[in-house]
Image (cartoon, rainbow, N blue to C red; front, side, top):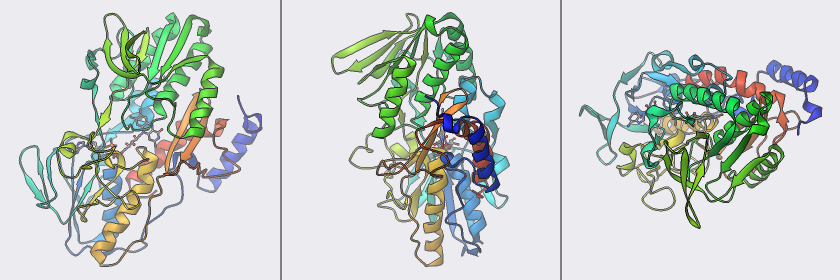
Length: 446
Ligand SMILES: Cc1cc2nc3c(=O)[nH]c(=O)nc-3n(C[C@H](O)[C@H](O)[C@H](O)COP(=O)(O)OP(=O)(O)OC[C@H]3O[C@@H](n4cnc5c(N)ncnc54)[C@H](O)[C@@H]3O)c2cc1C
């Protein structure tokens, strides 16, 4: 299991080396060298730029454009005042970090020169080069960056009641910091009492596809450490025939699940839950089926927010159309039909991504193309699909999973941080180094 070569001593030395080089936490994708940044500002020529969404991608884009353009009008639109560091939700739900660790405010990261309209975009009108806010205010633009993230479609799980997260064995780590914290409470009780722990993932695109797996491993390890592993059965219901979209990673997880005694079902798509009977309901190739649980982590289907899904920005056909993901070019993040529109972060309808680490690589590319348009030049910046997830496999160990559009593993520090090895150094990246660098990314400096 553990790689003794990287266990303890060598891992620490490597970490110090990386820290010395200013490049720790490669696997987060957030700590790699800066890219796509111009050394000097260019004239913004009074361009009106609207950014919809002030999460990881929107704030990072606002900071970069504010740094690079002199004299542009940049407006960001988002009704949410809190900022959530979502990669920390798994740690909160695992009892590793407190709720405060993941909560701050949007205002902290917003450059002074950027105006903020504190409401949601209700309508996108790319034909008319404007968006309309929830209160009906029309905001015209020369360039639009859509960074609205995604919608967690809990309503699609029949019988689900978000108010009951934390009670009667119901967990759900994705919904909010409160939900993650309440899930930790429910998981702790399960660790004491034992029974069946039920895990899985939705059958849609999702952010951080490693998180459902991480949480399964963390719960299993918590049981083991409490001396109660023998009192519990851990079940993972996969939505299709694989545990992860990258075959080599899927196989590694399959082996680890076997080693840890995690029972796996395939082709199980959750459609409902009976909170009273503590039963999850699935569609399978053999028809509907039920699995009983004592503790469950519900992860709902994920789709584009309604405002994007109901607009002409969405894919018109193909696999990304039904859930409303934005029709962008996968290399440049530029809209395929509206050249003055870009989509970055989770909303982008591209084959990989949907991690904060992907945001780190997408935003400089899209920003570079947008700035080049204003300057009347061309950019050759390309996003290669870089996606990364430090996959916790037990407390104190994580596996670095970094890949691109081709499913090729793209290790950031080959020879130091081995991909697909359970390493202490990767655990340190995930639990200590990722957040400061994420915040630096929001400020346009990583
Ligand atoms: C449990 C969990 C674990 C994760 N683990 C990792 C990890 O280990 N590593 C990693 O790299 N990534 C991880 N991620 C994924 C990462 O957090 C996301 O990929 C990242 O936040 C995407 O950034 P975004 O800006 O696209 O979306 P978000 O950061 O979600 O921001 C979207 C913003 O858009 C706003 N918005 C929505 N609709 C509208 C509208 N109509 N008008 C205006 N604004 C709107 C929202 O209010 C929000 O502020 C994890 C996520 C979760 C939930």
